[in-house]
Length: 103
Image (tube, rainbow, N blue to C red):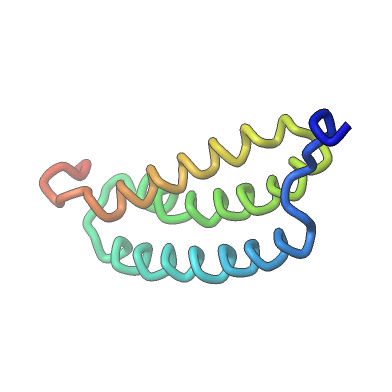
């Protein structure tokens, strides 16, 4: 029966510990990178705002979906998509030279 036992993922206390580290650590990193990116010349201004806001929205979706995945396995896709969007926004903020930015 141990072979066919349902895997419910990490225990709740582990999720709380890891989510605390992610919420404060990763959010601080995105705050610093976003502050630097806020001084870049990007037009239209709404695109700059979306690029700066997207990682904060994604980290909230990512961490909350860890808990929701314990209830419904379909939320695992939210973890993947939110993580990919966080990486994309980080890459855009860090790697976009001023020549390639939309003027």
